[in-house]
Image (cartoon, rainbow, N blue to C red):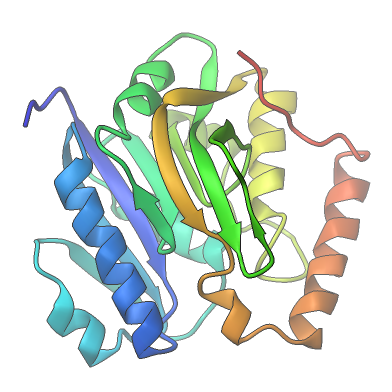
Amino acid sequence: MQNNSKISIVVTYLPLSEEVDIMTIKCLDLIHDNTLNEHEVIVVSNGMARESFLAGIKYDCDIIELPQNNGNAYAWDRGVSTAQSDMVILMDNDVFVEKDWDKDMIERLSENGVGVSFPYSILETDDYRSKQYRGRRDGFCFALKKETYSKAGPFLKDQPFHSYYEDDAFFAEVQLNLGLKLVACEGSKVFHRGQGTTKSIWNKEIEDGINKNKEWFENKYNKQYPYLTK
């Protein structure tokens, strides 16, 4: 495998069940097999990691175990602060990467004026599956420089609920306030099993929290949602 640069890959994991453990281990195995750049892997566990998950890990990675689930924003902040590289990819544990998936994302991130890069993806949920790869401006997988994070972050700001719309808020800061591009990279391909973890814990409290965050976001950014550019 050719190593072009050192990158940090942060995977968030919610230790709910053996099914989630298996999915997360598959995610890590594919990262090991398909990543072009020399890399480190950091797993941020939103709660104490399950023994079955720890026993199933085949390759070196750093594990950060948080006392409880405080949401992706908190986990991302911990992951970025731990990362040894200036180039960081943040991803959910239900993302399965294809060969050399990181190449285009990292190359585009090196261009002047680019703040965040995203892969092309196929999305599958229980009631939907996309038929072709397309660029998505979404928090399930994206790359950024620590320098950009230091200006636009942290991910956990003043949102009322700990999950959802924290990615939109960060991307809005990058695009609207820093004037940097959000780009999708057709050469970087992943499969996203949407709601691969959250479907088992979905309830009215989470739904109400998402609605509060949506209202918070739209008030803060005057309903200006970030968008992908070339």
